[in-house]
Image (cartoon, rainbow over all chains, first blue to last red; front, top):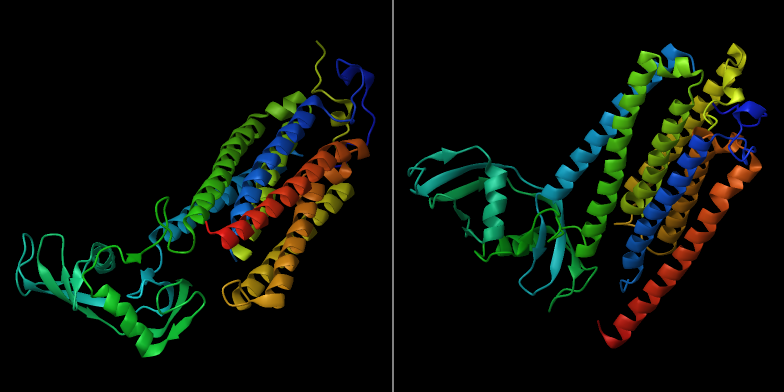
Length: 294
Length: 125
C-alpha cells in the first residue's frame, strides 16, 4: 500500500545485495521496469502516429475482494465499450465518403432519411414481382451502392431481382470536400438541395466503388488510410492490455478469495497488479487525447 | 536464497482506520477530479471540436487538451500508481529516463515529419 514505501525494511528481508536500493521489493521494482518499457512502446506508437499527422501538408481480505470484483466488472465494461466503438468505426456512417463526378472526395453530414422498403419490379431467384422487402434494408442498400447496383432509384439485389427504393428525404444535408477535384477544392462546403442532388447523382450512377462506408485496413471513410492502420493497431494493442488486465485481475481476485495473500502476510501482489491496471488507464488517457480529441 | 518478497513493512500493513479513511478519501477525490477534467474535455470537443474549429482557437484548445492530459497522467502515476509515496530515488529512476527519451523522440519525429511534409509539398510526393 501507498503508505509503506517510506518505512525502513528489516535486515532479514533485504535483497541478495543486502540493500534494497529504493526501499521497495524486487517484484514491485520489476513491475515498474516493465511498465517503463511498455510506456516506451506506447509512446513510440503514438509518436509514430503523430509523425504521420505532421507530415501531411496540412488491504483487508473482504475489502480487497469487493474492489477486485468491481474492477473486473469495470474492465469488462471497458472492453465492451471498445468493441462497440470498433463495430461502429468499421461499419461507418450512413452516407459514407463519396467521390463526386468532378473527382473530388467529400464526407457527408446530416440526417439520413430512413429506407422504408424495396418494391420488387423484376423477379430474381428469391423475390417475386410485387414483393415488398422490409428487412436488412440498410445493409443491402450500402452493398449495392459500393457495387454500383443502384441506377435511377432502382436497386439490383443479390438474387438478381430489381426493386424500387422507397426512402424518406434526408435533412440538414451538407458535404465537406476532403480531396481536390476539377471543380471543388479541399475545405469547400456544399449545402442544401444542390449538394444533395450531387450526392445522389453518384449513388444513382450505377458505377462501383464511388462511396466508402466505414474503415478497415484497406479503406477509410474518415481520413487518410494510414490513420486507420494506426487507429486499429494502437487501440487494438491497448484493448489487448485491458483484456490481459481483466484476466490478471480475475486471477488475483481468486487468490484473495482463496486467502493466498493473507497466508503470505501481505497483499503486495494486489498492489503490483494495480500498478499494471492503472498503467493501462494511463495509456488510455493519451490514446483518448490523440485519437478522439485532437 | 533469501526470500525478497517478505518485507518487514508488510507486517505493519494494519494501518489505523483513520489512515485508511484518509487514503480512500484521497482516491475518491482524485477519481472525481479526473472525471471532471474528462467531462470538460468531452464538452469542449463536442462544441468546439477539430472538425469545426480552426486557427488560433483550435491551437489553444489543442494545447489545452495536451496540458489536461498531462495533469491526468500525473495524478494517475503519482496517486493511483503510488509513485508519489515511493522514495525520491525510485521516482526519478522511473520518470527521468522516460521523460527525457520521449521528449527527444517527440522533438525528432515531429521535426522530421514537418521537414518531410515540406519536401513533399515543394518537390511533389
